[in-house]
Image 1: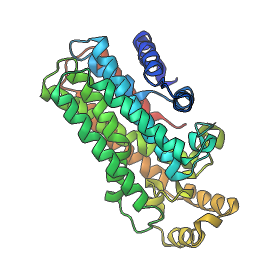
Image 2: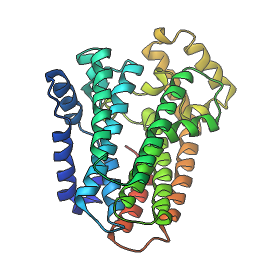
Image 3: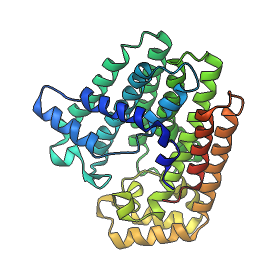
Length: 323
């Protein structure tokens, strides 16, 4: 079963969000219009809008307000992807050429800036100071996370805390903010909105951990990029951290990446095989499951309705994800 089936009853509202996304990114300048549209049409799970809409159903649901929040969150996410591709010198995303590969780094950076500006413009129509404070704080933290990721590239002396802090800023914060914003624009009090934020944070942590596992256990066709691409780019993820507890693997990875730009495909395949033969993948799934259980506990005290049950079902689905 695909995750979209879990929240299939929201399709009408999510289609309205998608249509709004398309309208919002239409720039007057033809290049910005082409690049933004290309990014949008490349697809994606739109998981942030889903969480905004679901959280909205926990309060007094107003589609127009929820839509504004959902569009803003997804645009911020899209902007970070464009900037990520420049930093990682990535040619593909989801199997499609990146903006930086179709144009150049400068066009990609300005596209990301434009999309971010449109996100901020969209959220200003919601006259709630707490919404703007939360969004601004999240953008600051995400930006710090991007810098930290650059700083930590090919740093083999990282620890678990470094990794968890990085994925918090990279993934979990935007999902947590999506959940809380959906609640806030729907009139939830701060206590209930905080429960949704905690749920989103734990879901985001688990989701990213599983993504990092799949970077080694999926195929290139499923990933839309080379297997082990994160490691090739110098990003030390949880399975690598666990595998490096073995002295032989740590030595192998240091030797392989003495000159990162010269790593051969055969050498990467050897590393990936060694990692998969260790207990790193299993231990990574175990940590993911801990976060999922915390996510379920976070919403357990919220009023029981279809949206809450869907949030619980999404958590259970993520826990079983193997592709």
